[in-house]
Image (cartoon, rainbow, N blue to C red; front, side, top):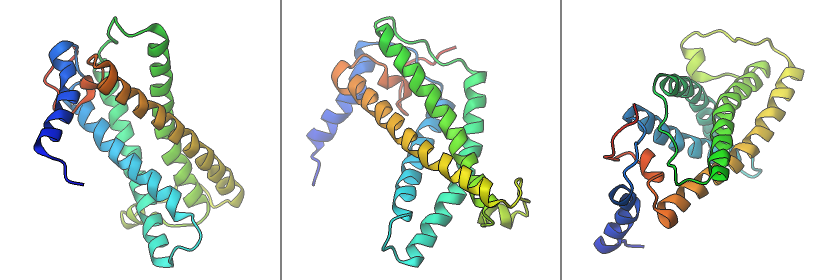
Length: 205
């Protein structure tokens, strides 16, 4: 489907209109870059994770997806460590006073859950792979020794945690995306604009 110039301008107007009507402090640039970089990787990781366990895949495709999933998982663990550091170094902007208390509480719960799962999921994946005796190519190439012993029981426990954690992560992502679209398209109250990569509003202190 071809998107016309008018349609593109309309989309950008929706995303940017909040800045013209509601001047709110935005997240700092490092936080925004990390947010959108990790969002893309999480979506790719989720897609790969759901597809690679399906029956009927060719061995070549399945291996490619597994290798991608394992090694990007290592990168995700490093990125979430950096992101947590950035969050502690720079306090996030306060919620607008117009945001209802119940929405602010749900947002806090969702954000906490996402942060927790973005730590738990890569760790559980790492333990499942290494305890199961499988390689993580990037770490093996660097000569990084396994941090967990070979154990089928440990691998199965980590596998279960990774599976159910993944379903919960998908649920929280859908809630987060839905809320973001609600604020961007319906409310247009500036909340979405705070994390938009090209936001020109002033950063929080």
